[in-house]
Image (tube, rainbow, N blue to C red):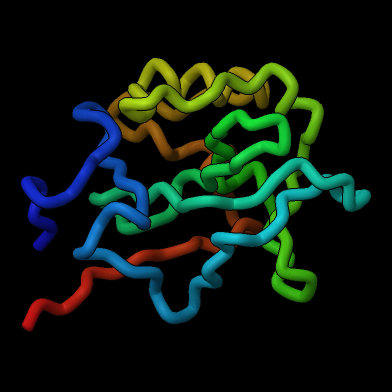
Length: 154
């Protein structure tokens, strides 16, 4: 079980946590660790580097890739709007023009309002509040699910 007192969830409304700040989760063995990989356009224009993964604590799935943009902004990219290129160790942004207007992640993490703002940059509606992540921005049948798993305690 995740000890919420020792974790640092990003928002009370969304059960999210940065992988780097949680000790009770790790990536599942089949999930590539893309932290440190370059974020590029399909034509290899560089935009920055992946600094972290944001995990849904209920579904144990990666919902966002945290990008440190080359211009210094820290952005969240919905997992369904990027492609993981394991052959070249890069993350490809499907619509790089969206990065221009993308809001920077607030210091205290994203609220649900912020998540909706990010989706609007991709012209993407979210799912209904009770199933917010059921929309293409968070994956579809062509998007591999990046999973986390609980760390066994001794």
